[in-house]
Length: 79
Image (cartoon, rainbow, N blue to C red):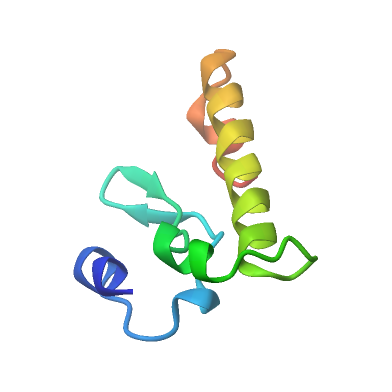
């Protein structure tokens, strides 16, 4: 949450914005839970922090795959 506050100026619970793409200057960023938080919450049940982080990382992987396939930025900006 401290890093999110510093970089994005967001003051609040990280769980409200985690997993969402946010524009930061010319970059798209996605806040994720801290690894230490995930270690303290080891459950993989749907809705758990580790489950949510896995789904967030799938979104990142998919976005990277789209960029590496040569599609232009405008076509993926709203996905």
